[in-house]
Image (tube, rainbow, N blue to C red; front, side):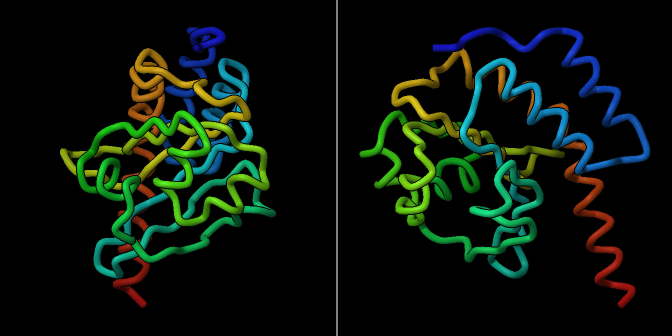
Length: 175
């Protein structure tokens, strides 16, 4: 049930933000603004996968009180993990029953007034390196058309996420 497609000017602004130097926070702020304008949302978060640690780490959150930056979770055997992180597919949780089944932090999700969610894999060089997660107050809000449009937006920021991950690895190795 898309309210409108992202404006071409907004997409151009997002592409420009990824040019160089890579600015993850700036690119995330812009994609957050685009998603808020086109879809409305209760929450937008972006995670990276930490394969060696078996964890995921939050790189961006539109609600840092509920979901703080650099928060980490163990990569668990959840529907979201299997579909998005392992399978590289979009997951649409249409209502509270789906959200309860798909996410162990359902109580927080419910308290935030979230009625549906779409999770888009961040893919770079053929590998899932993260997940972009958009939540809406209304149940049954997201559909396959939204999935296709959001995969494009997330694909635009994938190189910035990849550069951030590479930079973080380099810092870790030099320490």
